[in-house]
Amino acid sequence: MLMKKILLLTGLVLISCLNSIAQGTQSSPSKEETQQWISQKILQFGLDLKDTKHTYKLTFMDDFLIIDHTTTMISVNGNSGLHAIKMIPIKKIQSIYFSEKTSSYWLTIALKNNEAAISVTYDGLPKKMYSSTDFILSKSIDSDNMKDRLSKALNHLVELYGGTPTKEVF
Image 1 (cartoon, rainbow, N blue to C red):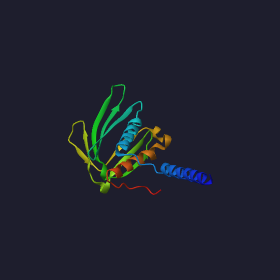
Image 2 (cartoon, rainbow, N blue to C red):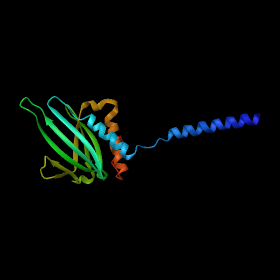
Image 3 (tube, one colour):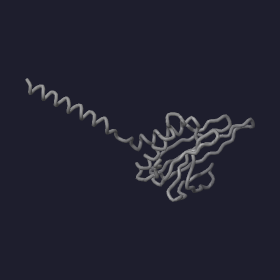
Image 4 (cartoon, rainbow, N blue to C red):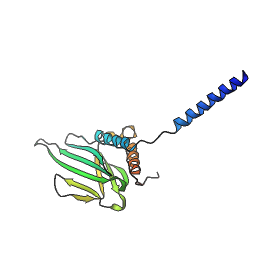
């Protein structure tokens, strides 16, 4: 009888320990989950003011982040716009940072060694190469610590593609 109680107690302790260990080791989001989350957040927080709108559609192909970016200027004389397709080699991303502007935040993605490897085509014009590019986002991105979360997700994506982004110490 005493032996049954000891075995039962030992079993319960073992199960409790294993459960605690299992809960403490969460796996990182997969490449696909990270891509989907980033795409949703960039779409959600695109700038939408009464006179200017920035919309983004992100896709991922091979080792590239492809951004379909439309800027629309709204006025009483009618709307005008600019359309760009940007291709960013994900593995070459070095830094990701936010800059606060008057009515928006700019999320900048810069490549290692200022390499001009970001291909940008505006409305069918010849492509140009840049070492950085920006997303113009709504001030509502201040909610839920979203700027930090988005930076971490982008850095995680770079690591998933085999790159090594520079992480801020402080």
